[in-house]
Structures are given as structure tokens and as C-alpha cells.
Length: 502
Image 1 (spheres, rainbow, N blue to C red):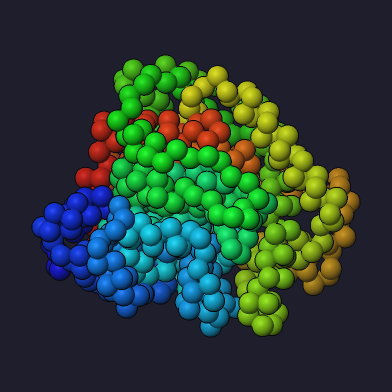
Image 2 (image 1 turned 120 degrees about the vertical axis):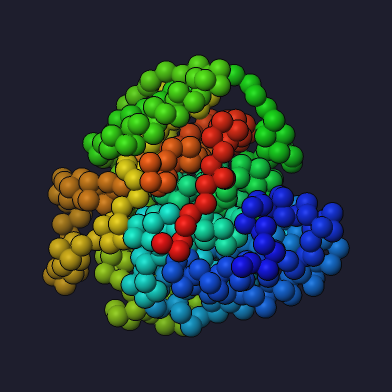
């Protein structure tokens, strides 16, 4: 039994209210979180490092209970936000023994909110997969069924929040990594607009502006209040978007009528399952019942071209990442210290030319402009975010055949093939169905930079979630929070609790 027996019944805002009313002590939620982590994490593998002492020190430093989430436990994703004097392992053997020497701006914002970082959540190696199954640390499991993936790359965060270890957790999203695990684990997952949060002091942006940071949570109000805390920029950021403090909290009570378009087909040619289509139609009906105007629409961009550009940008940044990590670790990685897929990404990143990278950036920006212009008549666009219910552990990871193919490319130094454009395009096109089938269109909002949110209104008869995505206009998280709050009232998913004893 948890120290504070009712701990799992409350979201972060609710826990903070109890603390400030002195109905519970400031350490009761933390004690409860620690108890649950110790009991449940051996089954889930959601937390790769506990930080209980650090969390208790944070309680002592914040004796005045400053911040919206003073006394509320949370997990920090083990990548994309450094914490001084702690390892940021990123799911990799290469980084297991390397401590960071600075705090990221986002880490400071979480701390300034009063939240207590009590552990580092699991990730796939360097966030390069949409399942959380790093070879060095083993698979993270979905609390709704321990045989299923929680998605990725913020899979540890989503698993921990869904299991109610903590009410919310840090997450980041370079190609769906907030929304995919949220959809797989029955959570709210808001990928914010580009440039809402800072990657300082280490980076101006990540993956050329594709990566965005935030949280996964069980309640819409926790999402609104935490983003209200962390939407800040720092000196030196390459770009920023103005945020009006308090506006997302106000959005929780806004009930304006919206025009909503829903899409059922993937421009990548990887079509969603009947279950995913049912989930979208179910949500479209919920929106109609709430009084919104809803109609079917279609995307008209070249999905395979977008995927090729996306791959070139990501692999290029992986190769640059290893240049940076060489300085952090003090040496290059050994071949045995990183996974085959990561090595291939690094190899390809070193193979592509500057002209390939600039073509990819130009192409993504052109597609982004076209998509935003064609969908501007809608306040919100509803689409699948995952193509089916969460699959079993092992199904998303590259199979042996894919790994052998990657090893052959590297061993025979076949990178020159990717410099021949028709061959490059044909190879990348053929790889798309294998690599993106679970979340074929998640990357679109990373390309456009628009905010998008996964909402868990749809569940199977045996209590497995299949979230869907709502995307809004550029810099309009307000509308997404407003709509999510309405859907939460009609379908209160927070009352669903996984049975991890099975």
C-alpha cells in the first residue's frame, strides 16, 4: 500500500492543492511515488535511474512551496534535458558512466514549477525508435498489458504515468515521441509548437527544429498548467514564439464552437487499421455531439518525399550528435557500445552531403507551408496517431534481416549508393513501410512545427487504449487544450486504472 493511500487518485494539480491546504505533508506524495516505483518498476522497467535523494533535497530547498506543482513527483526523460551531476544515458551503453556538468533550461523550468524529479525515465537508444526496447536496458512495458509496447521514444515516461507512479513526466517529440506513447498508454500527450521551450544552453534546436519538449500526463489541466510553467525562451535561442502567461489555463474553460476536419488515409500509403479508423470516427462523433462542425478531409502532400527528407535530416543530426558526444565522453564510441540501427544512422549521416541536407530542409519547409495553407480553414484536424492498438514487445524493433542488411551496407561501404538520387529515393521509399507502419503520419507536425495532442478517448473492450491526434494552427495550443478539456468531460479516461498484478 502506498504511504498516502489516495495518492493515485489525484493529478498533479490536485496533489499540490492538498499540500497547500495542509491536508497532506509536502513529502507524502514523494513517499508514495517511491513506494510505487520500488514495487512496480521491476515489472515495468519504466525508470532507468531513481533519484530519491535529489527529490528530498528539492523538498528541503522549496520549504515555501513555491510553484504550481510544489511537492508533486515527476520523472525526467533520460535524454533531451540534462541534469548536472547525473548521467544522461539515453538508452545507450556508450553513455552509462558519463555524468553531465550542467542543467538544461527545461530542467530548470521543471524545478522552478516545484515538481520533484525523482527518477530518469526509460528511452530507446538516442530516441531513434518508436518503441522503448534498448538492448542495454531491456524493454519497457505497457501497464495496460505487460506484453505490449508503451511506444517511444518517451515510453518510460508514458509507462510510469499510466501506472500512476507519478502524475506526469517529461517527454520529447522529434517524430511522434510524445504522442505515440501517450496514445499507446492512454494519456494526454501534447507536442507543443516549435520554439515553445528552450534547448539551451547546449543547443539552439534539436534535429533541425523537428524536436519539441513537454510532458505526458493523465489530466488535461496538468498539461495546461505545466506548459504554462515551461513555455519560456532563453537568451541565444535561434527563434521563439510569444506565449501569453495564463492563457492555457484559461483555455480549460473555453467552449467555443470549432470547425474540425478528420482524415482517415495516410499520404505514406501505410493505411491505418480498422480499429484506428473506428477511433477517429468515434472522436469525430464526440466532437459533433459537443456541437462542433465536423467533416472529412484529405491531405495532398507527397508523404514518401516528406519521409525521405525527414530521414536525411535525422541521420545527419545523429552523426553530429556523435561528434558532440565524443567531447562529452572523452572518446569515440566502440562498435559494441551502440546498436546496429544507431550505427547505420550515423553512417548515413556521414554519407549524405550538404546539398542533400539543404534539399531536405527546403523540402520539409515547402511541404509544411503547403499543408498549413490547405488546412487553414479548420480550427483542428483529427487523424490517427498510431495505426493500431499497441503491438507486442519486439514487433516494432528492427528484425534480424534488417540488422543484417544494415551491417552489410556499412561493412561493404555502400554509402555511395545513397549519393545517386534515384537509387537513394528508391531505397528510402522501400524502407518507409517497415520503419513507419505503427505511426506513419506522426512526423507531419514535427515538419510543420504545429502543436498536436494525443487524446485517449477510445479503448478496446479489454481496456487497451488507442489514442488519436488533434492538430491545430501554428502556435495555437489554446484550442487544443480547450477541445481536450471538453472531451475529457465526456470521456473521463482518468477513472481507468491498469491492473499490473496480472
